[in-house]
Length: 351
Ligand code: SAH
Image 1 (cartoon, protein in one colour):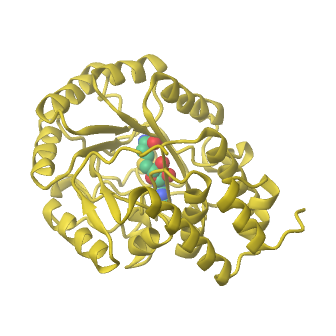
Image 2 (tube, helix red, strand yellow):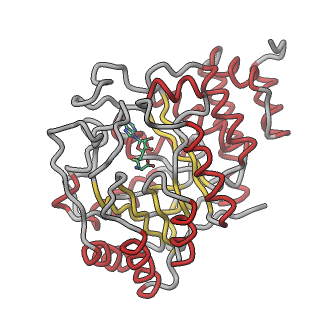
Image 3 (cartoon, rainbow, N blue to C red):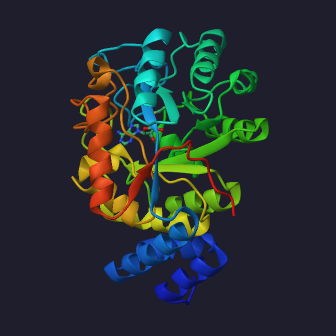
């Protein structure tokens, strides 16, 4: 165990961008409100040096809620018979992008369940069309695990970035969150494949997922420190009533913000979203995320008719508004804390 005080650990992290796994664990376990405040101040300082007061924005298009997987935490898991399944057509996705472009989005994130309908041929076609219509935009995919050849084909079709949360860097914990047909090694292999192919890669995890401990979180942080992803998506776990984890406790805003600050100091240029899940458990969750060191928001660009159906967890916000309203709402929220949403692709600025 480390004999350093938390203040010393925070300064070490600020100066060296690294702690030992034991130190990450101890800092999380013994954290105080004063620690969180100090950490957030350094995190904001680090982010301001690179990104100023700019917040990047991504238009999230939820392509499909059909999924072959059965993750215990997720509302669109295969075995939820009450999920009202849908998938968007290529045309609907292109229309959402067009609308998004007019609203100032220069990154589109295509997210969805693992739906076999979105074969390489179908997806490559969609990606190529988006890039053709909007050559100044980035396309991010977040469609789960695929073969290396598939990731390669999509990259060649024009996809720039891929988000694949690792969910937890602890093997035993991974096995508690997923049925046995899912594999920790495969998930990690996918992340390595994506990196090798040349994507800007995002990993990430839920905060407060069942059986998570300071020890498993320490492994997540060590993983981010060594993998050095371009992006890292974290948000609180929120139970969904139709899943095996329906009566487990949700994660907290405080711990999510604490971890956002640590992630910012581990890798200062990292792109860190203040997520919808964070906005769901606290009406000012996304603002609090930005004030802890996040620098990205991802308003919903999905057609209104499907918003409620992309139901990963209970009480998800932003399911009743048009894209333009979501965008304006976030702009106002960011302005209220002294930040501004910028119209650009929002690539990582490597220092
Ligand atoms: N099929 C894709 C996209 C999954 S949805 C993939 O496998 O990457 C995006 C993220 O939502 C997941 O990676 C998970 O971390 C998060 N998520 C799912 N269920 C959740 C819940 N109940 N609470 C909070 N986040 C959840």
